[in-house]
Amino acid sequence: MGEGTFGQVLECWDREKKEMVAIKIVRGIKKYREAAMIEVEVLQQLGKHDKGGNRCVQIRNWFDYRNHICIVFEKLGPSLYDFLRKNNYRSFPIDLVREIGRQLLECVAFMHDLRLIHTDLKPENILLVSPEYVKVPDYKGMSRMPKESSYFKRVPKSSSIKVIDFGSTTYERQEQNYIVSTRHYRAPEVILGLGWSYPCDIWSVGCILVELCTGEALFQTHENLEHLAMMERVLGPLPQHMLKRVDRHAEKYIRRGRLDWPEGATSRESIKAVMKLPRLQNLVMQHVDHSAGDLIHLLQGLLRYDPSDRLTAREALRHPFFARGQFRR
Image 1 (cartoon, rainbow, N blue to C red):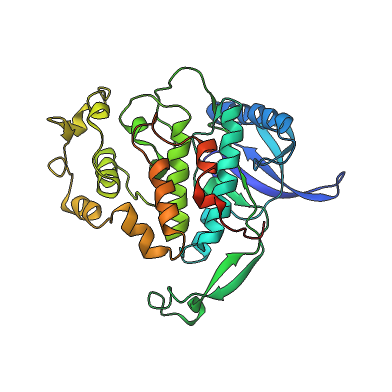
Image 2: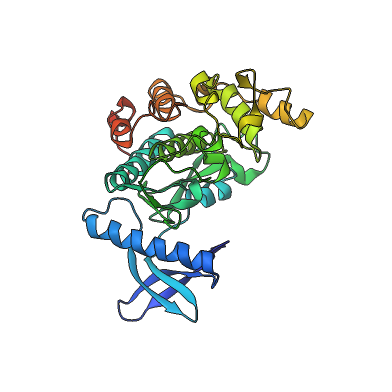
C-alpha cells in the first residue's frame, strides 16, 4: 500500500475478523523500532480515550515478528498528498477544505487535551477514510492543462479523514528544543531554536490548509534562511523579540536585528523563488471564491509567528470559517 523510511505498509486479510486491514511493518533497526513502540503506546492511549472516533487512526493489534514491529490498523483510503498528486496537484473545493480543516483541528484538539503533540502533521499523514471520488469539470484547470483528461478533476465523495503516523508524537513536558516536523510544515520557533510545544502543530495545520486550497505546498524549500525569507514574503517581517532570542545554530541567519536576506542567499534562484511568492491574502484570493475573507482571517491566526499568540485548536474550531455549511462526511 505504501512505503517510507520506516518500512512498508501491506494490505492484508484478517481471517478472524473477516476484514481487510493495513499492517505497518517497521524496519528492524533500533531507532525505527523505538519510534514504532512510541507509536503503539500513543495509539493505545488515543484509543482508550477516543470513544467517538476522534479522527485518529485506530490500532487493531500489534506484534513483533523476527525483529520487525508490525502494527495492524483499520484500512483507510489514500492520503491527501496522494489524492492531490493523482489530481495533478489541483486544489480542493473550499467547502471540502473547511470540513477537512474542522476534522484535523478536532484531532489536534483531542491530542493536545491529552498532552500529546503530533509534531509531524502533513498531507501524507492525513488519510481519507474512503477511496471513492467523483469527477467534476475543472474550469480553472483548463487553461493550465492541455490534455483532454484534465478538463475534469477528482473530488472525494466523502470528506471524512483520519490522522496517522504517531511515531514522532511527544508528551508535553518542558519546551523541547530538537528539530521536529517535515520541512515545509515546520514552525518558525523550531527553525530559530526557540523551543516548541503545542503551537508547532497549529502552524502545520495552517500550512496544510493553504496547500489544500492551492494544490501545492506553501513553503517549497530545503534551507533554513530561504524558508524564513519565504515566511516574511508571505506573512510579513518576523518579530524582533523572536530574532533576538535565537539559539547559536540560528544566529547566522540574523544580521543587525533582522533576517540576513537577500544578502545571505545562496543563489540567484533562491532569491527568485522567494520573490515570486505572493502575500497570504493574494494567494488565497487567487484560489478561493466565497469564504476567502473568513479563511484568510483563520490562516492569519494559525500562522502567527509568536507561538504564544497563535490560535489553539479549540479557539480555531470556534472561528466563523467553520460556521458555514456541511460537505458530505
